Image (cartoon, helix red, strand yellow):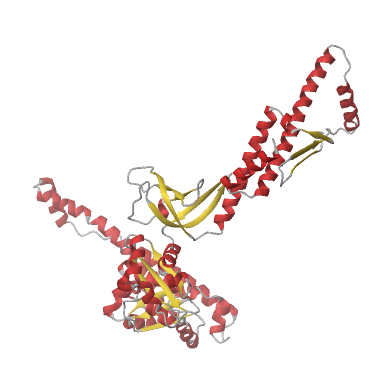
Length: 521
């Protein structure tokens, strides 16, 4: 091959695959070197066969004697001789494209390699190109995690009817690269069809052999962030900064924004004139509701903004537990919690603190219960009880979050570490007892519902005039009422109340702090 042809081939591969020019030259050099060794090995095997034929005819051969001389010294110590490989050096002139191949200090012509060696070189070049292309794509998209990409859906693999299936997406600007959109990363309620254009963010980049697998997502909060950057120029220019995003894909999202320019209203700029800007984002997310929250460095103010449109009376923050108790009136209680707790759940993710919603009466009730419960702890002092409540501990479970040294410090070092360990052990024991008692109470309604199925069936039989059902109904009326199986759990609950000296803790979950808790971040 002439030098001009080599340079043309390298330029074509560079434009087609987008690989580095030096990498292409290096791959060709290695392939030619491999082909020369392949040819040498083939020629050696041919010579050995010829020597074997001559040996069978009783003729001496030079190759056999030389091979014996090479192996005599190695076989003396019982080790197998290392395979002999001739030195091969292959270089390609980067400017003129001329190939120079030297093997055993003899200049070789690559055109004389033969069909087998040339085919082996071709396969090696293709393999090197695939590995290089895969590595380049992996490095390129690994740094783009969370970026917004556009593509066209090529096909959807559905395992069963009604399943959303895995969508294969052809990314714009990438000829030989396809990404996948799993069902778990698709917005609930939306449907995709082949040839549909979609926007998604890169969730993960995986390497499988010589292939790169890109996983897309339309449920990740970064999708909302990237859509804001695309639709709102102030966000793209970093005049408005997105501080936090919390999202439940397909339902609702909260976005906290702040402005670096006092003349720019961050909320108004994101909404746009008559909601024109936010409307485009909502349409892209198939009607997902978006609340724009004004960011504030004060956590108490930020929580008020995050729980809008509910009117907040007061916010109590407890940094040691990462908890905030929000007080509202009865009219705003359900509004602050939201449908199925969605509003407070999104606010919790937005601010990064556990938010509990309650009224003032519920707070006072929780404080009274906490004081009664904590007085049952051995070696505890009134000052420590007050300090624990001030730090936001309203139950035994809250105390278990602390460490023994924390309890000793909160007591003003009145309690030793051993006594603090006893306090912590007592709290853990009774927190577990409360949890078990609550779980037993939750099982009681299910058992009562199962017991009520039999009378309902008898009523149906009586409705259709079944004589046997009427007889059984009369017998049931004459028989004494059976003792329900739930009597034992109720007795256990009463015993627990006696130990605690207060009301049943499970009742607190229906109207106290835990009843409106988000359960943490």
